[in-house]
Image 1 (cartoon, one colour):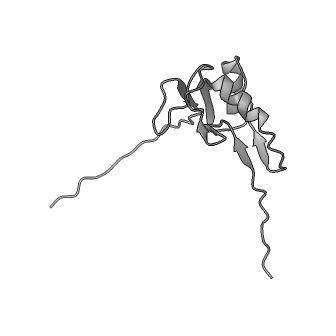
Image 2 (cartoon, helix red, strand yellow):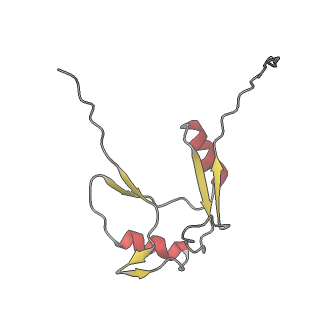
Image 3 (cartoon, one colour):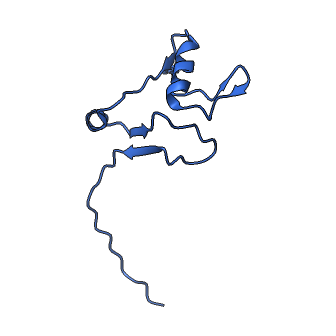
Length: 109
C-alpha cells in the first residue's frame, strides 16, 4: 500500500477589495485592512495577514534568513489597482545569485 502525503491547505488573506457587493478598491490600504480585520474570518486554515509598518530593512533581512521569496512594500494610503502593477507597491525579491560560465563550440556547416 502506498503512503499518502497529507498537506494542510492554508489560505492567507492580505487585502479585501469588495465588501457587501460594493468595491472598496479605491479606498486606502489602511481602510481596507480595517475592513478585512472586521470580517472575523474564523477558520483554522484562514490567516489574515496584518502586515508590518516600518522596519522594511529588518523585515527583508528576516525574509532572506527564512529563504522566502521576498516582501512587498505598500504605501499606506494606496488604492488597490485591479489588473495592473501599482506604482504604490514595490516587490523586493530575495534574489539568489551565482556565477556561471557558458561556453559553446560553433557548428561548422
